[in-house]
Image 1 (tube, rainbow, N blue to C red):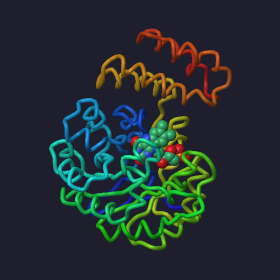
Image 2 (cartoon, rainbow, N blue to C red):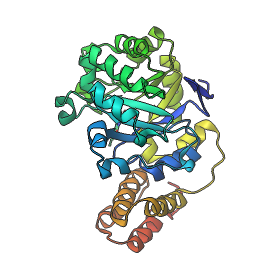
Image 3 (spheres, helix red, strand yellow):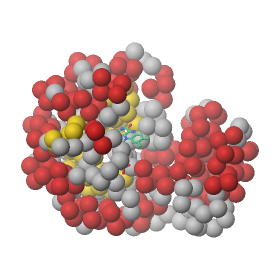
Length: 318
Ligand SMILES: Cc1cc2nc3c(=O)[nH]c(=O)nc-3n(C[C@H](O)[C@H](O)[C@H](O)COP(=O)(O)O)c2cc1C
């Protein structure tokens, strides 16, 4: 596997190791962290185009960005209506972004029933119309999808071809069908078929849980890059290790910095919730820290959270 810069449309990303959009996690502080660790690109979590159309403040907050979160900036939009997607893609909300990623992979029932996320894979003419509509923004447009809806009926290559024909500049494929949700061994062979079917960059995602997995998946699929998701919450340093980026902060320093960044950009309630979540992920493999978990969720002030972070992450590496 080759870790190298990646060209998407007219943009050059510093590496082909990408960080996935993760609702509840990839707020600005986490995006700053992965950018410093060498991720070639990170994404905002999915932002509903319908909500943005009505200027919903909570949704706008998901789009916060800063020069520290990387030179090339990507927002992920969720929506299935071409006219609304075009309006939002061309709106002020998207001005600071270089890339608009379209979510065609979200499997959750409410999203699916609304004909958005993964449901777009069942309606290729509409999915194509949405890509063409978002392209009118003049930005680089990427798509994130799954391998299909059912495990016994997957069609990643056909879907990738449609995306390329509609003008998409890159496609990320989560190697699971909707029916698999977030579990089970991803179907990397489907990603390999999609890669062979198109000439735009294809990124492999799903179940990449170590640096070795990243190398294996890239070799197995021939993909142009890989995208870490849940594993990077447990061990963000995997991005540094793969990209060879100089970064020598400890996990405790990272956690304390995440807290101060969250307080800088958001209110205290949000900051505490966010830090509880990333700390809970970061401590998963740290022996002897289970006893702090309850306290973490009960901690109601910045001082209490700081104290717990020091206890959990201050006792040497696992
Ligand atoms: C908590 C959570 C939130 C997610 N949020 C998003 C999202 O906002 N947009 C998106 O395209 N995918 C989202 N995903 C899917 C991930 O980006 C990724 O495709 C998936 O977790 C598979 O990768 P993994 O097995 O390495 O975790 C989410 C997944 C999880 C577990």
